[in-house]
Structures are given as structure tokens and as C-alpha cells.
Length: 369
Image (cartoon, rainbow, N blue to C red; front, side):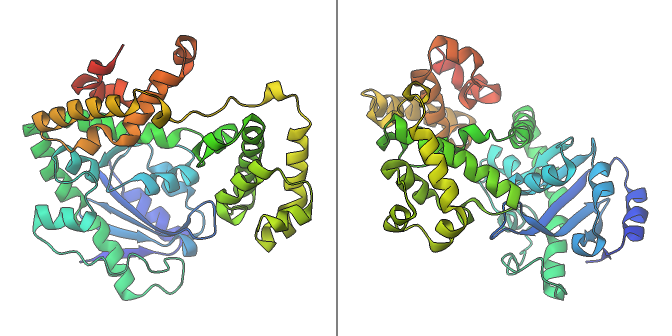
């Protein structure tokens, strides 16, 4: 397997001149432990069977590369985290995506089939995945790391070409392309800091004032994490946010009694107490409404079973994984939209996945009311 490693701006610009409109296979290696934004360790690119590895640490400014991706067809596998990196560096996702993992799902080869398994299934080649957990930001990279990284783009295009033939035979090409586009659209949605609290656990156990506190703290935590490039739990752990919202401490001693980490108290203690005090002084009419759990709705279990039975029949009919059509999360998203929003709220809220695109065409229309 031959490939070039780019370590200078001059090499990068010489490489970019060679790019044409053929599909580009793309992969990234990164490290994300303490940081909010993943640290890019290596970029792997393949076009027209020529593999190029770009060392972002040595090259530095990659903006010319990111702009060169504009309007290009890009082949990735399990693209979610790679797309996050592209968006962070490029500012947009103005590409045509073909995700081979999504293609495998539409062919019922597995709802989330790994790259090595896909290559083995389609090409009969065993790919060594032994280097996946190594430190990609450490230098120098070892020969084993470099070979592993190059192999990650070597098989993407030949696999996609075979998958596309099978998708065409199964009449699933349009659905596959829709799902790839919705993956891009989802990754481009900006996170609203005011809604950061909604992904936290046990919100239903809090009263309205507690919800106001956890909402304010979660907003502050997200903005702090972004500003300081820290992983969220390195600002304050999610479980600790709930304790703060439930007990509403008023002193540093109270924080210690709640067993917050010494660093959390030392760096953020006063700020946390100030946020809580501000909420406690607010008009209670400004507090968020209570959170209801779907499982507490009387019809939940029966409705969930009915929906799952219909979705299972649909999956059998079209030879698709049940999880691709509607995982429990997708069903719950639909039920939350259906039961928790009134007619006015539904007009402005995003439609649930089950009522859009190919899912609506296959099964979702049965649940529209």
C-alpha cells in the first residue's frame, strides 16, 4: 500500500491542485479526552486510488484543504464524529455525503456495522484495528499507526461501489441518500445553550425552581466548556448539576457537603452560588414547566408495543434493521412531540424523524393523526 504523507504547506498546496471532481474517501484520527473540541491528529484522504495522509500538527493551517472539499462527494464510514471535526474546522458541511455504514444498514448487513467487518464482508480482506485507541496527537507516529490510518480509506470507495449496486437492486438508493443528507443537516444544527439542560437525567424529579436552576447551570456549563475548550464534565459533572438544582446550596460549605470535587468548588464555586442565588430571586412564573416522563403516561406501554409491532412488520417487509427505521429514541421523540405539544407548539417545533422523509413514506404515515 503506497501513500504520501504531507507535513508542509507547500506539499499541501501541491496536493490540492491534483484534486478533481472524483469522490474523495475521508477519515480522521483524533483525541478527545479533556477537551470540548476534538484534537485532530491525522487526516486520511484517498482519491482515484491515491492515498494521502495529512499531518495537521506539522502543517498547521488546513483552511485551504477544508475549502477544497466544497461541493465534493465525500465517502466516510460512521461519519458522525468526523463530520463534527469537518464542521468545526470548515464552518459548514457543504459536501455530498456517502456514509458506507448507512449503506450497510439499508442492506440489512447490520444497523451500525464497523469498518473492518464491512471490508471483510464485501472484499474478504481482514483489516487490523489494533491501533484505533492510540494517541494520534503524539509525535512521531509509528509505522503501524500510519499503515493503520492509510488502510482506513483504502477500502471505502470499492466498498461503496459494491454497496451502491446492491442498493440499486433493492431500490433503496433514494432512501440511502436521504439519510446521508439528514445526517449532514443534523450535524449543522447549532446547539442552543438554553436547551442544554434537556439532555440531563432525572429532570422529572425536580420542581419548577429546581428546573430553573439546572437550566441556568447547564447553559453556563456549556458556554464555559466552549470558551475554555474543556469537556463538559471537566467543568462540572452532570450528576453534580442535578444535586445543585435539587438542594440549591447557598455557601461554599454547602457545596462541600454535596461532595462536589475540590476543583469544581475552587474554580467555579462562587459562580455556581451566584447563578443559584439569581434564580432563587426570580419570579417563579419565569421557571420552566415541570418535566413529565413518557413512561408515566397511562397509554405509553401499550402504544410503544403497538408501534414496535408495526415497525417490526415494516422492517421484515423491506428487509431493514428495526433500529434503522425507528429505534426506541426515535419512537420516544415522536411520542413526546405527539403527546407533550399542543397544536400551536407543533407548528413551530421540528417534526419528529418518524414523520419525515423515507421513514414517513414507509411507516410514519400510519402514525400521523
